[in-house]
Amino acid sequence: MKSYREELWFNIEKRRDYVNITSQVQKAIEKSGIREGLCLVNAMHITASVYINDAESGLIQDYDDWLEQLAPHSPVEHYRHNLTGEDNGDAHLKRQVMGREVVVAVTKGELDFGPWEQIFYAEFDGRRRKRVLVKIIGE
Amino acid sequence: MKSYREELWFNIEKRRDYVNITSQVQKAIEKSGIREGLCLVNAMHITASVYINDAESGLIQDYDDWLEQLAPHSPVEHYRHNLTGEDNGDAHLKRQVMGREVVVAVTKGELDFGPWEQIFYAEFDGRRRKRVLVKIIGE
Amino acid sequence: MKSYREELWFNIEKRRDYVNITSQVQKAIEKSGIREGLCLVNAMHITASVYINDAESGLIQDYDDWLEQLAPHSPVEHYRHNLTGEDNGDAHLKRQVMGREVVVAVTKGELDFGPWEQIFYAEFDGRRRKRVLVKIIGE
Picture (cartoon, rainbow over the protein chains, first blue to last red):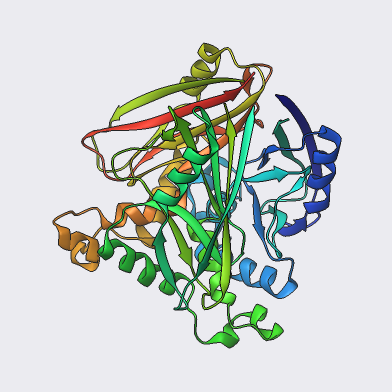
């Protein structure tokens, strides 16, 4: 069994944004030399998500509006977490809806994906350096 | 390390439906010959989910009502995604609540499950052929 | 390839509670002797979650309030599932928001975590014995 580890770094300029990282994950698979296995891609921070869905700008705006409706940023006093001096209580909730991680199959050295599957990094509390972990195991 | 891959195909007649696929996944594990490992089961389409919960018809109706409340299908103009000509904006949101995939342990050649765990395929934009991927790695 | 399996047992006194299980999972990794691989941690019951987020008491209260708002416990007649005689319909919905499982990377024999990642068991229908499965594969 082989294993491979790589970190992807982000410094998102806005509080919230959505970045397609599919090609970066595919490159990690190629570097790993693994042909058959599983690839874990997870946010290493607890106010960000990794999820799989469509690379369509209207949908991304729909997600952002919907998450803001489910867990609004303001008023920041609404969240007990913000009593710690943070203002990112909403980001911890949004991240649970979108998820921490995806696990994807590696088949013949490639992401084993349906026609529209794309991997996204979703930032809910940006404007600082944050990381995604890619861990691949297989043969 | 062994690996095994299988696709399950669905053509759900309704827009939304929930199908118990536990026995199909167990059969894939048997075909794989893998006794100890991990089994990934994921929707290959971005308007469908794979999740684990109870095979109880009242609960399934509760899920359907709740998802429709969290992300209603109508009015379709509510979703920017539907400006592309689609009417499935809601389906992309419902899928995020229920999740894309499950990862299950394989122990002694079987799904390593608690007493009520059952694997479901949840369709949120049916009436066409769609796939689920089963990928198993182990020994 | 090695594999390791362990069950963690809980008997939560309240209906809902949130328990940090990070050190128990780290101990399982040490017992496994696995240095590089993947570790699955999943609730074996369908009214509980395993998730990764911050060990901050204000945030945990925010999660609990938010889940109760998204899927209120009362009135219990609101859920068709409760026609079976159960009163835990809400718990099945809350569990879908927070998720069944996490998959974490094992690197150099340790949980490969960002600075604030902690693994929690979330109970939504307690006051009885329930289990979490830890399954680790790797080398």
